[in-house]
Length: 171
Image (cartoon, rainbow, N blue to C red):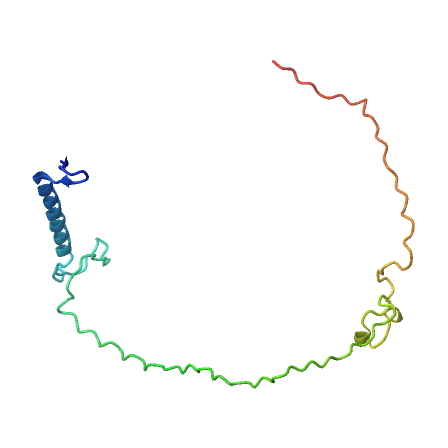
């Protein structure tokens, strides 16, 4: 039980609270030691593996000592030799940078007068696009001014007076 002391903000602890705290601390310590001790149990003595009615050997989940009459297992095989891999370290090579940058410009070839006829003369060796024969049946872009659009007909709406809609009766 907390009681207010003479000064504001101070509290005193009663003897019962001190005993309760001590008892809880002691109980926690005893439980911790008891559970830690149980993990260090010695293995059980050797016993043959369990066998069912059919003569099948089962699994014994208990930790047991090995069979004293069993032959000594062969020693573990020798470990393979350690493989050492050399990792090459990069070598820094200094490169001399010229003090003055070369500002030499190369003059571009003049563009053809009509870019639509031959847009890239360097790639086609001066052969115009229309100089190459077009295989028959190949669709091409229309040349010249666009033609008049084809006349379209708009359907005229027809009223449906001969149709009757089903009616539902409400009950």
